[in-house]
Image (tube, rainbow, N blue to C red; front, top):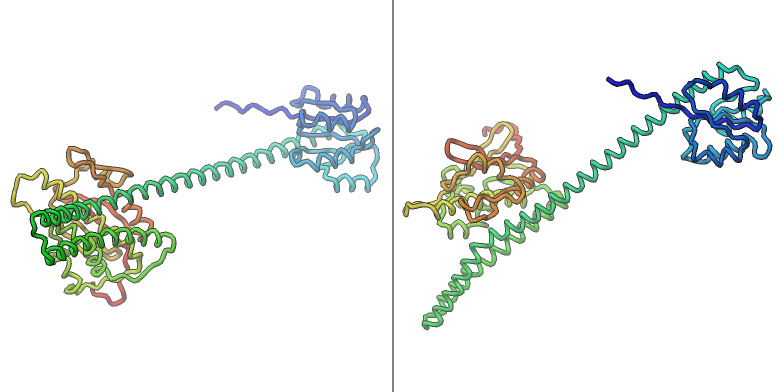
Length: 411
């Protein structure tokens, strides 16, 4: 290890007597000090910003500005606060000493002084000054690093918020795609019926009812995302019955599942019936809007995977199926979502929760299926975990919610 280079200390000698200045310089001859002279208080203050000494040896009695005045000026300047000052005087008056200490001197020596004593004191004060400066520099460095970290954290949070908003818009677009297509078909059917004079009142009413269901669905999606934003600001927790919330969440995407011709079950029971017949009574305190959005996004993603498989499937009898498992462990409620659509590769699973991730166009039509925003909701709003696990060839979405069973529970 290389030895650190020793710092040369600078001493400013302020005295109007050239003989005294010469004697003081001789004390530090061949020592690790740089000695600068000033023959008056005025000169000392003039050159001080350029010299920036470590130690000032300051005579009290001088023509013009005396040592006390110079001391007062130096101690009034925040930038000079670490300079050590030793007052020199031919008087041993105790009142003069007390005045010097009151104005901020570090020490007081009477002329004539012993050279070795002066050298020893200067060495001590130099080490103290350098140590103090190093501590201050370290503190400033720590403060600077903390500020950088806070700025970096703020930047990351802003980036995450922008990514979240982008992912939210993508999610809304996914939710709206099928009902918009269905609306287009319905409007076209109404026009065709009109052209062929087949537009009866009952047909028109059925078509309007169907269209209103699609419009209500799209409106509910907006309300759902708005409730998530409100929950983020309010952090309001509610008591949630998990089976009922699952049904409520899945009902909001019933039209999508129906249009995709996909069946959905919870623990082997049709999702619309499960909440009514289950004897599992899971109650937690959480944010219902966030949890509904999480569940629907996972199921919608599973539905996209099924649709992708249907596009490539040569089996005309293929029927999409989403299976949800709901159970508890000692500390968690587990919600697993599996499907018979395209199964994700290990590489796709690795990147699936990254910002803006979309599966390759060879597998899908770049539909932005990543779950970055959903994973953020899970971690930041319901203190849970969301990941994809492999079971043989199956890629299964698993949502874990923290859970404390009530006393005497038999779950």
